[in-house]
Image 1: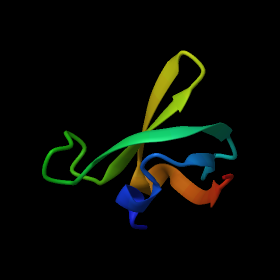
Image 2: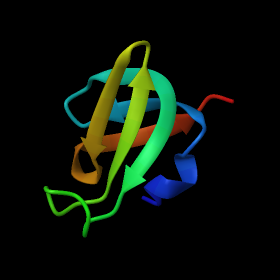
Image 3: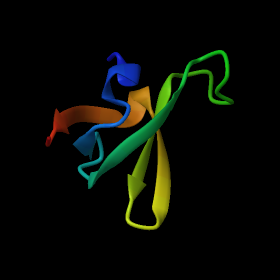
Length: 64
């Protein structure tokens, strides 16, 4: 997945464990900068900020 292409977009993120989150993609970390060694995206949901590693993500649907 090219996670950086979702920055600034509202999205529905579905995780492999079935959880779904709707919010705005605010940032991206590449594998070099990320402690997990994977690319990840930041999703702002209300007052919460989530950081999902690429391996956790099943799908991303753009909502706007």
